[in-house]
Length: 252
Image 1 (cartoon, one colour):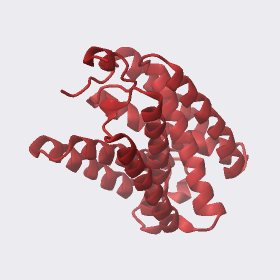
Image 2 (cartoon, rainbow, N blue to C red; image 1 turned 90 degrees about the horizontal axis):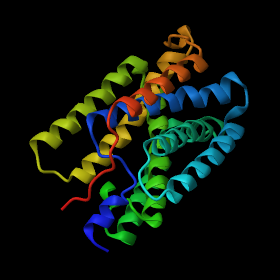
Image 3 (cartoon, helix red, strand yellow; image 1 turned 60 degrees about the vertical axis):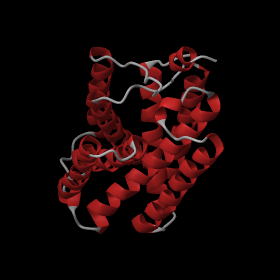
């Protein structure tokens, strides 16, 4: 297979500023959307996780079956990972009683295990290799773990660590700026920096989502979860519709 054939089948978008902005909107939507189902509709964490898990599996199936990169399919799948990540983390942290620290530790182990298995099986965890079904499965499982970990980390810093939603947002935003600076000023592996930034956007979205929909006495703005989710969905669609969403190119 020649390089042109490989490039034409890469199933993920190129990493640009718009990519990161859309990702943060998506992770914030994951928090408000997950809370809307589990809390506002009172379905609970377990039932909500089951519903979102089904959506996630269907979205991944459609994404893998697609012959080329389609922006809307890709971002729907991202949103599916972040909603199931929200309710799954809440279920582990709260319903199972292992706490934020325990949940974060468990999910970090699962995430590292997924990346390690991916690397040992296929020899690379770079996103510009995501073109075949086997690679895509590793990619989406890893993303699902990272989204779930991010929810637990966001809750941990905001609640247990006492930083609140504003303090946590500043913390994770600062870490993202640091990653960007390292990418600009050093030659550290771009793959490692990508996954670092990808993971950090999730707790940022989680605390921003909580800030939007949590009650005033919990430090939030008490906005409707459905309204906030609707606005975020419109912003994501605008990012996809207005700005170019091209498939990533194979590194040479």
